[in-house]
Length: 350
Image 1 (cartoon, one colour):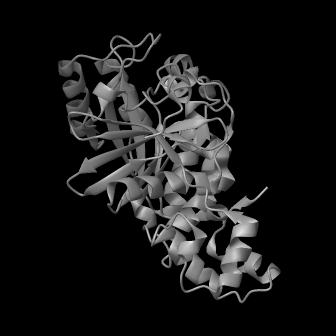
Image 2: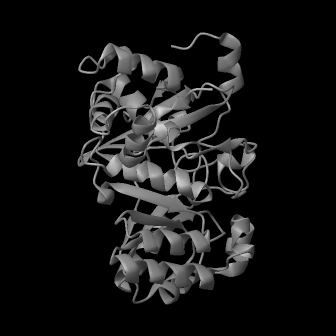
C-alpha cells in the first residue's frame, strides 16, 4: 500500500527521500508543491525529474479527499462532508470572521469520550485520522474555495488529545515556514480533559491555544455531562491547566456550554469564579445547541447574559460565542456523519 505523503513532516520526508536514493533538498521542493501549491498529482511537480516523479508515484499517494456534500449556512458558514477514501467520512467546517477564515477540523472518525451534549457521541469510533488526513481537510477546502485559511481549531469530530501523536505532527507540518506556515498562535487544540496529555502538550511548548471543555465547576454536574470527569475530575484538570499556563505563558480558554436548569444559574457562576480565580484564562460561553436525542436545551438569553456579566464583574474574562452554522448542524457539538450513508448510496461526489 502506498503511503500518504502528507503524513510526513519535512524532516521525515528528507529521510524518506534519502532511502529512495535522492538528495534531501528535494524534500523542500516537494513540501512546497504539496502544502503551498496544493497540487493533486505528483506529475504537477514540474521542477522535479521524471525519474523522481515516477518514484513518488510508485511509493506515495497524495490522498486527495472527495467532497460528498457541501452545505452553506445563511450566515456564510460552510460544512463539508469528506470521503476519506476508506469507506469512512468526516465533517469539516469553514467559518468567516473579521480577523480571517477559520477551519474546524476533525481528528478522529467517531469519538470515545461520550459527552452527553455532543452529536459525535452517536458516532461509533472507527479510527484516528492521520496527520495528512487532518491537514487534507484544510487543503481540500482551500482548493475548493480558492482561498487561504488563516486559523485552525481542533474542535470537530473526535478528541484531539486521544490522537495525540498525529495531532502534534499535524501542527508541526502546519507550522513549518516552508509549507503552510500557520503560526502556532493561530491554532487551537480542544480537549474534554485528558489530563496526562495536557501535561504532554505543555511540555511540547508549541504556543498553541489550549481550549478545555469544562461546562461545569461541579464534579457531579460535569460527570453527568462528560463521563471523562469520572476518570480525571475537575481538580486534576485545573491542576494540569495551571501547569500548561506555567510552561507556555499562554492563556487557557475554557469552553462552557450553557444548558437550561443544568449549569446556567448564579450559583453555577459563583462556583466557576471560585474555581478559576487568579488563573490566566478566558471563558467562552456557548449557548448549547440542541442535538438529536439530546437531553439538554439552550439556556435563556437572559441567563446567558447574566452569567457572562457576573463572571466579568468578578474578574473572569468571559464572552459569548457567536452562533455560526446552526441551521446546517455545523455549530458547536452538532458535527456528526448522519448524512454519510445517504451520500454513499448516491455514489455521486460533487
